[in-house]
Every structure is written in structure tokens, then in C-alpha cells.
Amino acid sequence: MALRNITIKGDEILAKKCKPVKEITPRIAEACADMVETMLAADGVGIAAPQVGLLRRMVAVQRFDKAGEPFEFFLNPEIIAMLGENKPGGEGCLSVPDMRGVVSRSQHIVLRYRDVDFVEHTDTIEGFTAVIFQHEVDHLDGVLYIDKTE
Ligand code: ZN
Image 1: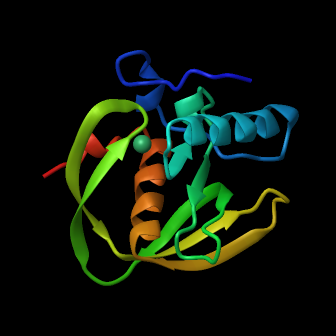
Image 2: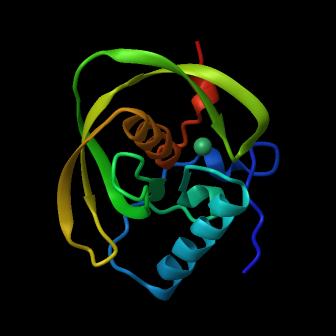
């Protein structure tokens, strides 16, 4: 389905806090497909469910830290530790068109999440991929990177 990406100009949904995913329903599966389609169309590296209009804790992230750099889904992602130093880096957002800004983020996180089969995992993620996760998990709490720019 062709989708509009929700932008800050268009919708208050981006400022809302998302609810946890409790089970994989058809609506959740549909949102997963919408997220990938929207992200690929915009040449993005990550997307959160509220950006396609669903207030559930769900993100898709391109895993630059894995062979083949796959897009993967993360349900109820929770950053349980930030290790090491913060570093400033350039960021943009599909929902904030035509803007970029510098945000200081941890370069090393520990993430707890459920996969699309609803199995729980804990993963240690470093570098640019760790930065993407922090940006996307912020979306689930109604926080945009422009709230954090230096
Ligand atoms: Zn974003």
C-alpha cells in the first residue's frame, strides 16, 4: 500500500507516547510492511511505527553492524544501557523534511527487544547503528531529534 509518511507539520501523533506491542495482529503485520515501504521510498535507514500512524512500540532499523546490512524489526525495543562516550553526529528524519541537525548520542548501547516471532533478545550494538536505535526509540516516546539538537 502506498503510504504517506507522517510529518511534524501534519500530525500530532509524533508527539505521543506509544503503547507496547502485546501480540502480532494483522494490523501490526500491515504496519511492518508500511514501515519498510515508506523507509525504502524515502531512502531512510530507520523508521518508527508512529511515522506511519500507529502508536505502538515498534521500529525498523538497517543493521549496518551486520553482514549484508539487513532491515530488521524490533518490537518493544528498550535501551537498557548506554555505554561509553557520547559523540555528536549529523541526523535527519523522514518526518522532519529538508532538515538536518547535530545530536550527541551514545556509540554503544544494550538493547532488549522482541523479534517478529515475539521472542525476546538482548543485543549489544555499536557505532552508527546504535545512533539509529536511539533516534527511533525516541520516536516511541514522542521525542524528535530536533528536540535534542545542539
Ligand atoms: Zn525520525
